[in-house]
Image (cartoon, rainbow, N blue to C red; front, top):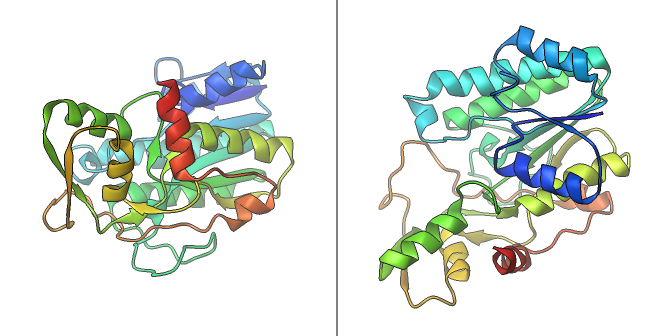
Length: 277
């Protein structure tokens, strides 16, 4: 049986949709029926479900709040919660898929980040997700750590929805142009999560986003290319945020491609996404 944590989040909902399409059975959990920060609650659910595969999609993702008001919750969910899920998965002999982030890197590398590149998280969210990675590697015998970036999709709030909403009420927008990375459609990510299992890919760390790269400014221009709106580039200094953002967090996708998974470009993924919303 498959167990999903964070099943009502942006990625968890996309994953459920994909599994439903393929008529694959699963048990969906969220904070209402399994508080991952409570070891006893996690163990009770795992003992009942007896999963052979765990998609750990639950996470604290409020990057700026994690710096101050959400710091404690960020640690409880991303570190303690991951530990309890990993321990329960290992007791059941289950394979665990843990979703991580490009924020485990500091963004100072001019080249693409390989899966074994040196990590150096510079914000609290990145730090806790990296600690989660280490926990999974220490506890789980069978695991996939999938680092992703700039996630957008049908469910939940994301950059695409924000830009489209702002374009309805603003004649001009300013968007950061000196942060470069790879956007990721939740559909592509969910498909890869199924792919590594179906193909019995080698356990370990993978990077998965859509192909090609862009700045947030270029991403916004593509999102709003059919809208009558002026978009101007600004620097990170002109748009200060609480949490540090990597300036260059392009992750090398070659290991994911070597599994036989075909990765669409971010522009193709964005076009397909917008066509169905």
